[in-house]
Each structure stands twice: as structure tokens, then as C-alpha cells.
Length: 309
Image 1 (tube, rainbow, N blue to C red):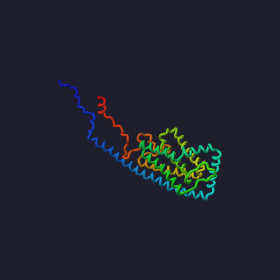
Image 2: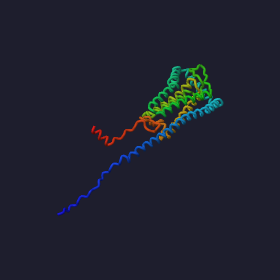
Image 3: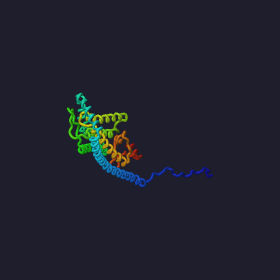
Image 4: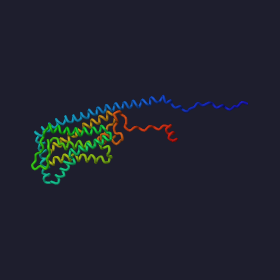
């Protein structure tokens, strides 16, 4: 008697077949190559524009400094209120310096050693070398150009203006060269701005307010020592601060423009110029690829081979 049980029907194999390697390989290989080439071209264009903008910022600061200095000299020569402020500040602080020689000695140490332009430039040079060691090439270029551009701008204005230093009876200090602007004040403004804007990403947020306070007090202290020692007028110090700040603002704008061209996000002053400085790979290479190669994913075949080993 024939069996009445239903015969099982053949079920198709539902297991998906892996795609052929030849079908997936070309797309996976060409896409990273195209992305790398695009990123490399974008980075190279950003680098070229950064160099031009950085030098142009220094030139703009120098060009703006000369008319500013000439205008200030004219005002100083014809506007009696400013002359009275300069002479009154010099006279009062000079009298205090003569009455307190210990205080004057402290001011000399601060002005001639701690806040001396040579000392601050050495610190910035060491910072630049450290940035090169960290492979932060553009940030190192910004620090070097800002420091050198500030120094050259100050010398240029001094030569054009040719303002004489204060002439006081029984002077407590002497300084060579012209008076306007104060080289100490200008170097202090540029140097402490460089240190802040570069190193802020390395400082914990709780300590950043202290760093700002130390920088501001140092910049103000530099100017005060120069007036109190009788080697600069009050307006010399103001001019040094203004011109130093102008150089930092213009070169900082050039660096921010490079970040925008390179596809990086905008940063605030509180973050520093390059927050990525804390990373192992702070800046992209010219070809747009990271310096640290990403780890390759481990496939199932590699896992099996590891287990067998």
C-alpha cells in the first residue's frame, strides 16, 4: 500500500553567498585613493595660502605701524595734554625710583633679565623647536613669523619716528636707541600672546584663567618697569602694546584662514590656535593623510590563524 505521508519539499539554501572578491575589491581600493588625493590637494592649497597670508599679515602690520607712529609723533609734538601726561608720569615715577633704591634694583632685574626681549625671544625659539619636534609645522611657522615680524616692525617704526628717550636728572637706568615704540613692551605683548595661544590646549581648563592672569600681569609689568626706570615715555609703552597686538591679530587671522582652507573647525581664543596639539597627529601631512597609520581590521580568517597559532 502506497504511503500517504507528504513528501518533504526541497528548500532552497537561504545562506547568502559572499560576493566575489573581484566584485568588491576595485571600489574599496579606488575610493580611499581618490579621497587621499583630494585631501592632499586641499592641504597643499591651504599651505600655499597660509604662507602668503602669514607674510602678508606681517607686511600689513608694518605698513599700518608707520602711519600710526608718524601720527602719534605729530600729536605728541603739538598736543599739550599728551605731553603733560608723558612728562608727569616720567617725573613722578622717577622721584619714587630715587627714593627707593631697593625697589629700583628689583625693577632692573625684571626689565633686564626676566622680561628682557632677548630672554623672551629665546623662550619663543625653544617653543618653536618643540613644535617642530611635535610635527606641528604650521603652528611653528606662525610662532616664528609672529616673533620675528614683531621685532622687525618695532625696529622699522623706531627708525622712521626717531623719537628721543626721556632726559632726566640723576637717571637710574640707561637704554640705547630710539624711544618709540618700546621694544620691551612690544616683545612682551607678542611673546606672551604666542605662549598663550600655543600652549593653552596643553593646560587643564581649571588652570587657564591663571595663565591668562600671569600673561596680562607680565605684559603690564614690562611697560611699567620701562616708565619707572625712566627709559621710555608713557606713550612709547602704549604704542608698543598696540603694535605688538596688531601683529598677533593679523598673523593669527592668517592661521585661522589656513584652518578653514584645510577643513578644520574654527577655534576660540580660549582654546588656543590649535586644539589638536594634544593629539599624536596635530597637523595633516601635505598629501592629506594622517602620520599614524590606522590599524587594519582583523578578518575572520586572520582570527582563525591566530587561534591555530
